[in-house]
Length: 154
Image (cartoon, rainbow, N blue to C red; front, side):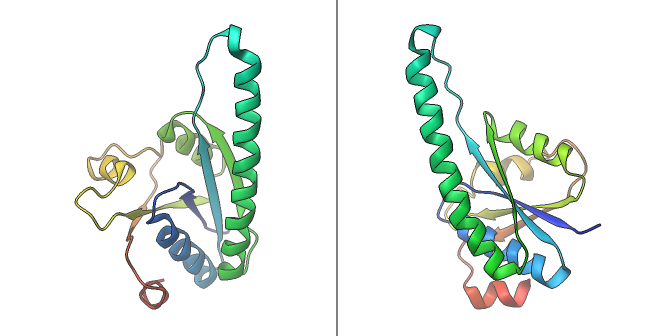
C-alpha cells in the first residue's frame, strides 16, 4: 500500500515548504501527496441563500484552480499524480474526514512559521490535540528551509 502525505493547502507563506517536503518525501518513498483545501462555511440565513450559493460556487472554482496549479507542482516534484480534496468547514474536522476516508494517508505534513507563532495547526499538534482522529505521525517542517535543505532532509 503506497504511503500518502497529507498537506493542508492554505494561504500561509510556509505552505510552500510543507508542499516541497511532502512531494520530495513522496518521490523518495514511492508515495503520493494528498492536497487538502479547506473552504470556510457560510452560515447565512435562507433569505440570502442565493448569494451564499454563488459565493460557495466561486470559492470552489477558485479552490479547484489553485489545487490544479499546486497539484501540477507536486506532481513535478514527486513524479506521481497527487490526490486533490476540497472540504468545507472546520480545519480539524476536514483533516479528520480526509484521514478517515483514506487509510493510505500515513503522515500529516505541516510547516511551522519562522516567527514566534508557529501557526494554529502546529500549536494544536504541539498541545497533543492533533486533528487526525487516528494515530498519525506528524512531520513539522521549518517554513524557512531552502530547496537544498528540503532536498537534503527528504
